[in-house]
Each structure stands twice: as structure tokens, then as C-alpha cells.
Length: 417
Length: 97
Ligand SMILES: Cc1cc2nc3c(=O)[nH]c(=O)nc-3n(C[C@H](O)[C@H](O)[C@H](O)COP(=O)(O)OP(=O)(O)OC[C@H]3O[C@@H](n4cnc5c(N)ncnc54)[C@H](O)[C@@H]3O)c2cc1C
Ligand SMILES: [Zn+2]
Image (cartoon, rainbow over all chains, first blue to last red):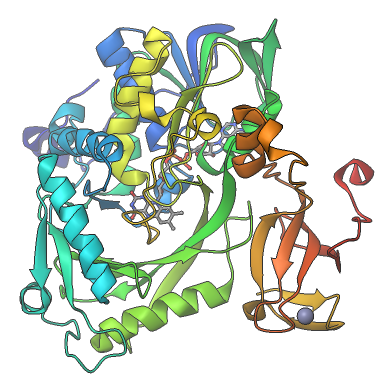
């Protein structure tokens, strides 16, 4: 595989960029693999990459029903941060953050990780107390995190209405300078290319319709397009479709699948150089490198697999955004879409073994798993390789919903992000 | 945007008046004290979450404030029926197959 570099760019310019190699192969599946990963989103592809790179298991297939990264990976608003409240989750997200910081080099693929900082606004006294608490917890965990007052917020985002006259005045914010955004597609493509290079078979247009078991252990998957594919171990990383896959194997998960929507405006000149999120009025916005405002809405309350939600949900979000940024009131919106997010009762993921032997699930990331992509793949790879949970994954077992050891991150994850 | 028929108001109203409350017909264990942790956990947290027909609890929050049930397809969002809280669904997944 050819290495991407500035020199390569120059060289290919001479042949009008017509001779670039394909980024990955398009193999026909083998009869059997050591590990089959179901779901070719960012998390599944990252899992395959780290399995091959760090655990030297290369006889792997990633089986994807659509195209790589076409699920929530391609539909999210790309906010990356690690300022979660509890030790378990902040360790996991910070693990991901450290991997983000070297990811473009590691993958030899520009994932456009931009540490432009994230503000989580507070609009009430209680918001500010919660922010104080969360920031203090972050600092104890070695995560960069600060409490800002109204003036400091106004200095960072001069176009935001920070006056006391708004319905929900900005009283301050938490600020994580190392947080930011990344290019979602590039993350999927970068992991795909790097995994393919290590010998992983990426099999697109291949839907898993059944999980085959023998004596309570998973032995393979039945696919619509390529029949049976056997595997010693199976990792399901299918986000909103996790309950469907679990049902194939005969158990339920503590998940509900909901539509989550986002929208982007027409491209405008650079005006917002950081990320602004607000739990209280429920909206979040950043500006992409192309110039469009990227705005995320909340989940729709009903269960849905339709990759679309109700119009009223977007309307509420836009009301909040326009209240915060009156200057955006006449910006025209370009596109709007939905993903299916797998929400978990404690707003934390599930990285876990299951009632079926050799079958593992990585799911429940709900509205906020993009930021965790490298860390999630990294710890899930270790979990699949050893057959037991990686240290950072251990608290996230699905069985915590039996023994009650929940990790309540509704405060830090309150706004869909 | 859904137009939802409230079986108590006996009228179609806009979705904005309602809140979805998740899976319907979840029976509270008769004797919680005698449940194992697993049984209690499954009651509290584990859900069917089907891709297809779903019986779900809704509340007419900005209307009569009563709880009722909807049978809805979670793929195309089509509402098949709405029925009162104590009633059984007439349309079920096994029938549909
Ligand atoms: C609108 C929106 C905004 C968001 N904003 C943010 C944000 O700002 N920050 C953040 O951190 N997170 C955000 N998220 C959440 C984030 O997108 C997800 O948590 C994350 O991308 C999940 O990645 P994944 O690889 O697990 O899932 P996906 O990318 O959804 O991949 C799962 C894959 O499994 C495949 N699949 C499903 N069923 C089968 C089957 N039977 N057989 C084979 N393949 C199957 C799907 O086709 C899909 O490609 C947002 C999500 C949405 C929808
Ligand atoms: Zn009513």
C-alpha cells in the first residue's frame, strides 16, 4: 500500500491524480475467520485495526450491510471531548482523546482532528454547580477542564448573546481546550485503509441475518449475500441495530433505538471557531472547515429505526440556536438527516461479553460515541483478543443492569452530542 | 410529524401534544422482594426494542394527560392502532407474518 505524503501529492499531480491506488480491497469472504466484526462503522473498523495491529490477529472480517461508515459515523456532528463526570467514563473517553491526538500519524490518514475547544454552557445556578462539580472531577482525573464566567465565554464567542436579557442567560460554561471536532468520514476511511493494509477483509453490502450458535456458543453468522461465515469470536458493533442482532442470538439488551437528527447550513465565512453546546436549551453548534454550521438536535422520544425523526424536534433546536446566536437567524439550512442511536439507561456504553459464549457486544453509545471511536475500538479489540474485558471496559459490562452498578452520565451526556 | 388519535379524547391531535414513554405492557413483578437481581434488572432496564411492530406507551401530556397505547411500525413509523391503557393490542407481530 502506498504511503500518503506531501511528496506523493506532488508526484500524483504530474499524472492529474488519475493513478491513486484504491484505499482498500473488495474481497469475497472466506469460509471462516478468527474474528468476525459485524458493523463497519468507525467503532467496528477501529476494533479490526487494533486487533490486527496490537494483537496480531489478522484473520478478521468486518461485515457491513451497507457501505463503510454509512451509519451514525457518517451522520454525527463530530464533537470530541472527554470531560465526563465519573472516573469510569472519563478514563475511557480520555483514553480515546489521547489516541485522537496521534491518530492522523498512526493511520497515515488525515482525520482533520481539530482541537478548537468545547464550551458546555450553564444557564441556571444548578447548571453552574453541576459544571463546578464536573470540572473538579475532570481535573482530579488529569483532564483539562475549566470553569468560565459569562465574560470569559463572551470573549471566546463574541457573536453569542451573553447579555442578561435573554430568556436563558449564559451564566458561564465548562471549557475543555483539547476538545474539538474531527472529520467523520475520514475516521472511517482511515481505519478501513489501515486495517485492510494489515490484512483485514472489509466486506460491504453483506447483511447479517442470523447469529449461529452451538451449545450456547456463537460459531458464525448467516449473511443475506454471502451465506454462512464461520468465526471463533464475533464482535457486534452495530449501534442502533444492536437489539436486532441480540435478538438473533436470543437475548435482550437494555437499549432503545431512537432517531437523532442533525442539520447543516449553507457554507458561510468563518464565524465560529469553537464548539458550543448547551444542555439546558438543548442545542449544539460548530462550523465545519467547509463553512457550514453543523447543528445537532435532540433525540425523538419514540423508538425508531427509520433514520428520520419529527420536524418539531429540529424546530426546538433551531429556536435554541437562534436565541443564543441571533446573528444566525437568517442563515439558510441546506440538509437535514437522522441516525439511529442506541440509548442506554445510564447514558454509558456497553462493552461486554454476553449470555452467548464467544459473542461480544460494543454498543449503547447512543448520542455520543463518535468521540470515543479510537478508544472504543482499542479496548474492544483487547476484549475480543483475550476473551475478557479490557481494564477500561470492565465497568461497562451489560450485566451492570443486573447488579445495579450503573454509571450515571446523564449530566455530562445530557445534550445529544 | 405524527397525527395521533387519542382513544380518550377521541380525536386526532398533533404529535407535539404527546410524549412517548417506551415499551407498553411491562408487568411489574407481583412480589419485587422475591425477584432475583437479574429478574429485577430485566424488568427495569431490558427492552424488546424491535425493528418493526412495537407496542408502546404514550401520554397525552398537553391534552387529557391520560396514558394509552399505540401499535406502531418502528421502520416506517406508521401508526397501526391506538388503544386504551387496559386494552390488548389487536395487531401483533406474529399476526403480521
Ligand atoms: C445526528 C447525530 C449526531 C451525533 N453527534 C455526535 C457528536 O457530536 N459526538 C459524538 O461523540 N457522537 C455523536 N453521535 C453518536 C455517534 O455518531 C455514534 O455513537 C457513533 O458514530 C457510533 O459508531 P458505530 O461505529 O458504533 O456505529 P455506526 O457508524 O452506526 O456503524 C454501525 C454499522 O453497523 C451496520 N449494521 C447494522 N446492522 C447490520 C447487520 N445486520 N449486518 C451488517 N451490518 C450491520 C450499519 O450499517 C452501520 O454501518 C451522533 C449521532 C447522530 C445520529
Ligand atoms: Zn387525550
